[in-house]
Image 1 (cartoon, rainbow, N blue to C red):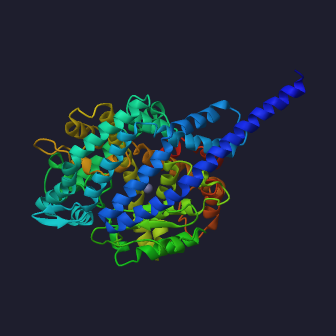
Image 2: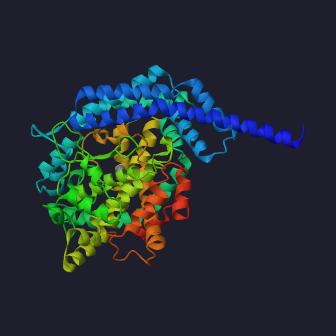
Image 3: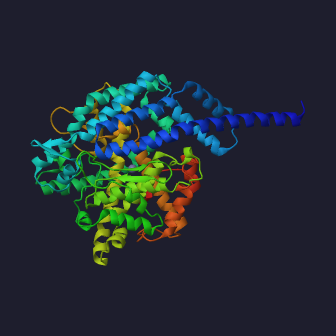
Length: 551
Ligand SMILES: [Zn+2]
């Protein structure tokens, strides 16, 4: 066989593999794109109204999509293409990767899959319609936040805290069944449990994550001890008790995942009476990322039956992007809206010339990073000055405390994420252990919050993430790390500044241009680690985050 012949034969093999791969992608998108868009519309309809029949329709549609991804013959062909090493077109190879992980998760017994989907939907519906009670009166999660941030009466605070956790005890039986089903499915695919499967199919690995969380524990333990001591003294003094007597309901958030507004300044006062949606619209336009179209399609205010939290939603990967929120004129909701719009602009600015499968964020934590990058601004003194028209005097006052707020918030978040990551890892390793006690063990170890007296209940399960975004929480932490890495890149390489001192991030279109070109536009064209090197010049590490908040 001549060299020429050998080369051309190899060429044939490559071409036929490429053709096969292209055909697999084409057939898949033709079936799944319309179903996905329809499911996205239904999810919107279900969460904005709380109507059971919409949840039912959504469930059917999700099952249909999963059934396509469970086809064993197609999976074998995808796997063969991926393993052949003969797909030279990197865009096509990336799409095959996407298909591979999508199908891998669904190579489980169809009856088991159906049970999982049904149980998941049942819990979500209960969660969506459940309202805890204080002295027999139904309360929303917004009421709980209001009480926990403003109420001086400790008995009322405790009642609100307990009300926020009732739903955990209502859904716990179903939730543990769901966790066991998830484990059974993971084991069918050769993983030791669902946690490992979720990490691997997210193109990550458990050892890397353990290392990052060990580093973060080590780097934040001492600073957190100090910050927490100061906080406890302030709180205890306010309640007229000693720091040792502080209970979870004395803090300002049901899970102590947000900083209490207890220092000299209450940031809520600056947002009182302000139009939160208008502030967000003006801001995003000023950095060259207008969101008028997004807001026009959004559902922003509280209503009976509506999903009580917030999310950003890409309906069709063709520009129909929306936000669901329950806005109030507080700093918390300013942050939330900036955050959800961050998700929304990532989706809005995907390059539409990219194929459908790649018109997605590079990773779920990459879109979290963008959401966090913008969400952080609601406590930034210079941003507040520019957006709220504050005087120099007010700005200086805020600046004196805002660094502390941001620093505390970030360090606190690390400790909270440690609880979530370690708890979920242990939960899926053994769902039959005493999880209620484990929860408080971890809360005491990482957050330094005392467990309440009496037997531990399943209040932890009121954290919706366990149901709707299982084994996902580490991505919020990676998101923070990436947000800091992008911040450092923008400060030094895009805006060419020496430091971020006095930087408001308002009114500079270079910010939007950089993000569109390096992050939003390419979408999932590159794997997340590649995208980070391309956009920031180095791999993801805790370094920039530690520089910004911990040192
Ligand atoms: Zn988010």
